[in-house]
Length: 208
Ligand code: AMP
Image 1 (spheres, rainbow, N blue to C red):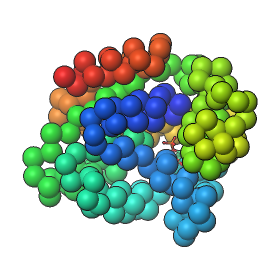
Image 2 (image 1 turned 90 degrees about the vertical axis):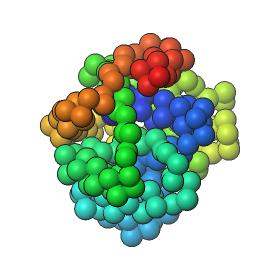
Image 3 (image 1 turned 135 degrees about the horizontal axis):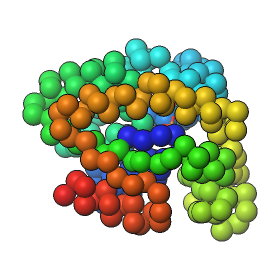
Image 4 (image 1 turned 45 degrees about the vertical axis):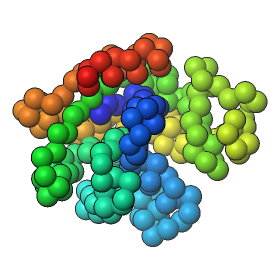
């Protein structure tokens, strides 16, 4: 867990591949649905563009389907879910059906002012979704994806006027979900600023 632009996606990708488990990102699932103009994408786009959360009943259904897939049977890393109390409770119920859950929560601490500078420089590939930052992790060729050559674009919800709304939503609805997990004693807070490798190492230490 952590604020928008806090490095959840980047760190989740690294950890999931190091541990051989899938990274399940609700943001990525929704963006793919928007690109492909599926019914889910059509429903989600307006909420995403405004910086609002997609309604709980929609996202909980998406997650339930995803967790049923075969690659998620031996563990998974969630990125961007749960983001509300209702989502956390639904996840808890789903995990209970599967037996003892052993859920662990990593909270990335990143101050709001850093979030704004990170998000405003973020660019992603319109074709494969790979993520770059104009200053911190630029692509080799400006404006083109290193992986597939696709054009790099700014996410609609990374525009400055939407960032503030996303931060507001984070503080009002998502940050309080930490208390739900703190009561279970499973939260480890980690500094989310500094070099990528250092943050990855801190997360590994926190989970060891
Ligand atoms: P992210 O890439 O995680 O920052 O997500 C981008 C946007 O997708 C969010 O601002 C929300 O509009 C939507 N979204 C992603 N995950 C969720 C979730 N768990 N609940 C509701 N909306 C979500």
